[in-house]
Image (cartoon, rainbow, N blue to C red):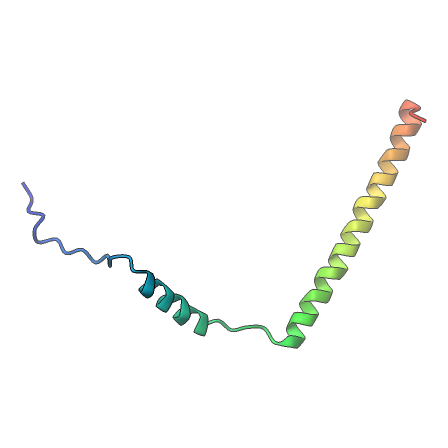
Length: 74
């Protein structure tokens, strides 16, 4: 029968104070984007969203007209 008394636990007990200390330490390691990078990324998201809306809207219009033509739904 193996002895379990010699096994050391490397787990630390949970402590709310330690948790917030570690969160603070992690936040110090974050590299935030510059204002210019943020503007550039925001513009890219807006342009992609507008293109996506136009593509989906165009496909919706095309399929709506096709269904009206094929099934005479007017």
